[in-house]
Image (tube, rainbow, N blue to C red):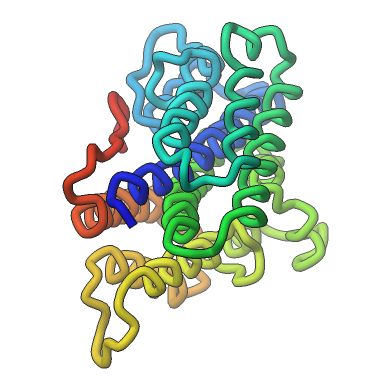
Length: 305
């Protein structure tokens, strides 16, 4: 496969996942702000902006910076715009259904349309449209190298963004419902209650989102998906260890999480999640060097990616 096409497919997966997960993170932040009257809302908003790679300000506008502003490098409107551009470059590879769905979504949100929607409706719309596009990709594209690159990009972005979402309860430490909002933000509340019951602890919530092998947005599940995609893209006859730097990085991160002692799950959680974000950045650089050499690689601009 041409490195240009592989690069575009990888970033389509990343941009669409970033749009969906940014919507999830902002929604969790807003719910936590409403539930905890003692929360310093300005500080919490600045903490969220810093977490997403943007500088804070005296009067931070989270919705503008992370949702509506197309020039913001981390808004989901910007991510959808870049996803459409990447899909246009790979038009001969993505299915017609995927291209039409991405283009329709972009047309629906441009020109100030998001600002005219209620936040709850806007977040639901973004989540559902990204889910539709992902489902169409899985069901209308051959599961060949192109689909593997798209899946790989989606998985690495989900690891990065889920780790950021797991850091948000620290902004609302006094809120008893903080982890309920995080579970709902990941679409995990129903699955979590089925697994642990209604009377579960904070550690149970973190354990589920980090280590559950059957939930598709958990860190372990997504790390496994990324490693499996890399294994299929690379040589399969290695007898000792993978020669793929990205696979080694993600495999080591998976092992670290998998064998973390239960009583250490909540200890230094923001620091652990920051290390995982660094692994995602290093793995992306390794994948670009190995597979996209010679193409004009896409890069995040202006944020701490």
